Image 1 (cartoon, rainbow, N blue to C red):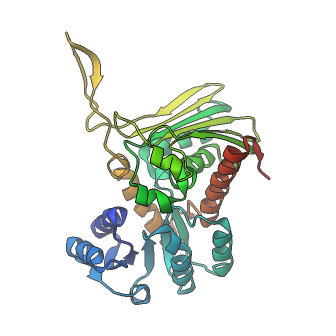
Image 2: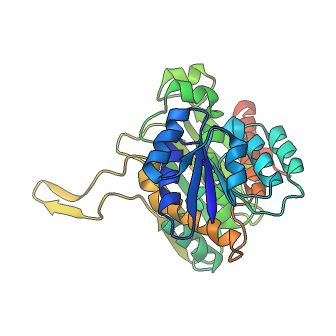
Image 3: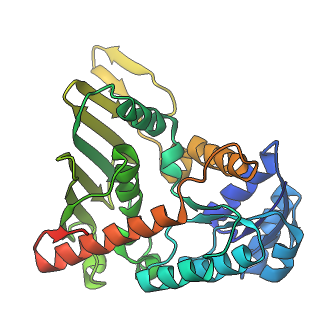
Length: 328
């Protein structure tokens, strides 16, 4: 299976290496608006660096899109209309109207379109979601999701990121839907700027909490911070009538140290998302290839990507209005 990669920045280069190492596909071409970046990815993987998107699309069976968010809808449309399978990084776009226009433009597409909510493929998160679905904790009553970055991204990135809810928390909004297998009925959001004054000056927040009520009565709490001095903090707790499940943080090893000067000391958490979710990115590609080969249904779907953005927008509405937002 021949795959092309559009976008070879930090996350794109990681994708390039994963695709090149995959036993069931061949990374044949890479493209980036910044040509030296594409050439670096090509040199690292043996793929060909091409100058134009259409040239890449013509050569491949499937396209992975890891370029800037504002290009996603155009690239999804062009790839889908060419009959190519697509794996696109999240979010689909920052503007729901653009997402809906894209949805209309690809309505007749038959090849699978998968959105890159890679956390669904983390072994711990996947096992937790499966256990919830199989009734291991009885009726789910509470879901608590913690997501804290080690440090804020550069201000120049924040200016185009869409803000904390659309850029960062969108992963957590998606995983909540994934675990509970439903859409929430109501959402409330609170946020402040406590980490970096520059973030507040942009009109964004760096510290936020969201609560959601699902039709079953289950409640979800998501807390996000742009700064965690002890490393990348990623935890999910699912609590139900028959027990609790936890998908916890990762360290380089699982060693705990006990001695006269320390009790139960563990290593520092992993640095950031590429390290913490390394396995999930590999599993994501596995799932994409399986989908193309007809071995599984596409997931996360384009509609999953759309719904996550709907929730992020509703969270922003609640933040600014100070009121809970009902979801239809």
